Structure formats: structure tokens, C-alpha cells
Image 1 (spheres, rainbow, N blue to C red):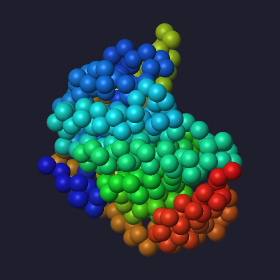
Image 2 (tube, rainbow, N blue to C red):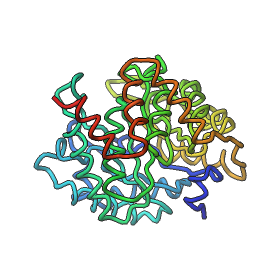
Image 3 (tube, rainbow, N blue to C red):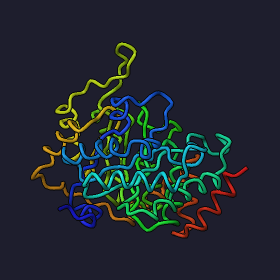
Image 4 (cartoon, one colour):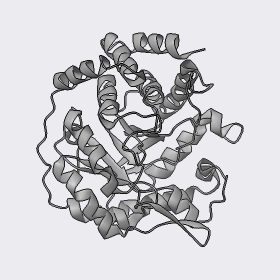
Length: 338
């Protein structure tokens, strides 16, 4: 049995699951249908998906709560009940660990959008309070393109529950996020916020993420996560498909594992076959030695803060608070509320 404390210390691998959406679409999820509702209407089906990943080798399954915030759920379900149902579905699979999943809100934060930072924080805090009432083992905040939105989520989770926080950003073909954040800067900001593990999910296939992960490994004082897509999507007969084979996915992930990534899984297009291939890859493999001291990471963050620009400003606000989350929230609210 893999101990989470060893994973957080960077001494053991941890294998996540693959895509939930891909599996639900195969089971007939209609376009526009809220996946989270299936935790109420078809809990056995959701548990069956989780169990398939466990049987393939997943040590962690991720709850079906990617969009379980009150902004997206509206009147379809209460946030607290959505997380309770989803965690129960995941726990019934027999997984060693359950990761409570938080995805993006779907709106940009002011001044790039109409959503105020404080409002974003409160939406995430509501989710975090719901998670705290479950028996989830950790929280994963994933698929974020905006480091500020990620900061709102991380701060909210740390304020409202005591579980380890994993955080993954998504990047475009340019190697930066949709808002232009470099992998190095994202990793430095997340490390300064005190996340327990950080990395990348979605974005592209594993071969296309190697430079992104390399940048993160150079500055991250915590374990680094890789959850890539099954290659780039293609539209065949009107349906989105992914053509990278499970064995090729695992081979493309290998260089990042050899470079020091220790938490691995899959995102869009991946299924239990992909996780099985990665599980085989990790079998009897030792973790590659990698050490980035937290103070070294903070020094690099201070250097970035002097470079100017939005990301530098965000990092500077985090560093100026010297670990005081209340001060960080106050600074962000003053700058990013209308």
C-alpha cells in the first residue's frame, strides 16, 4: 500500500485515474447534460467507472465533481449534496484514495472578465466546506488556465479544510496557459501558495507536455503531476476521438517520470487501458532523485516578481503576505474586485 505521506515527500509514485468525461460519453452522456447529476441518478454507473480504473491500477480515483459549483449546478443540485454523493460513489469503488475534484468556474476574473476575485473565492469556499464534510483523502484543483483563479481555489480549500491540495494547470500548444502564464511562473506561484503537489493536466498529449513539465520540475519543491490527454483530438464521423494508443501514451510519459515526475494519470481520451499501461510502466520502478529546496523556489519566485506583468504582480502579492492567507486574499480583493 502506498502511503500518502511518502508521496507528498516525493519518495513514492502515485497513480491517478484517467478521464471521467470520456467514459461517461461512451455510456451515452448527452451534450449539455450535467455529469454531476449522474451521482444521484446512476450512482452504480459512476462507481463502475471508478472501479474499472481501480482494477487497471489506479491508486486514486477522482470524484465526478468537476463542475460541482453553485454557478454551474444552479438548481440542479446543492453543492454539499453533490460532493457527498460523488465521494460516496468513488469510495464504493474500493480505491485506496479518493480525490475531491474542483474545476474552473467558467468565467474570467476582473478585469479580464466580470467575475470578482472575492466572488470566485466564495464559490470555491462553498465547495471546500462541502468536501470537508466528506471522507475524501485529498483535493485536486485542476484544468485551470488562470493562476489567479487557481489561487482563489487554493486559498479557499486551505481555509476551509485540512486535506492535502494538488493543483494542475492547463497549457496551450504555445507552452503557456490561455492567459499567457509560463509553466515556471505557474509552478512558482503555486509553490508559494503552499500546495502539496502541482503540475499539468489536459492540454495535449504527453509528448507535447515534456517541456512544460521540465520547467515545472526545475522550480517545484513538491511532487509534480502529469495527467495528459490521449494525444490531440480528431473529429471522425462527427465525433471527437483520440488516436494515441495506451502503450504509446505510457512511452511518452516515461521521459517525464525519468526526469522526476511522480504523480501520473490521464485526462481527455484516456481510459482504464491507458492507466493499465502506466501502471505497468511504474511497476518496480524507483523514483528519480530530485530536490528543489523550498527556499530556493521562493528565491526564484522573488526574481520573477521583479520582472513585471500580471503574473509577476500576483506572485509578488503572494510573497509580500509571507504566508498569511488572509493578507493574500485582501490584496487580491483590492486589486481584482470591481
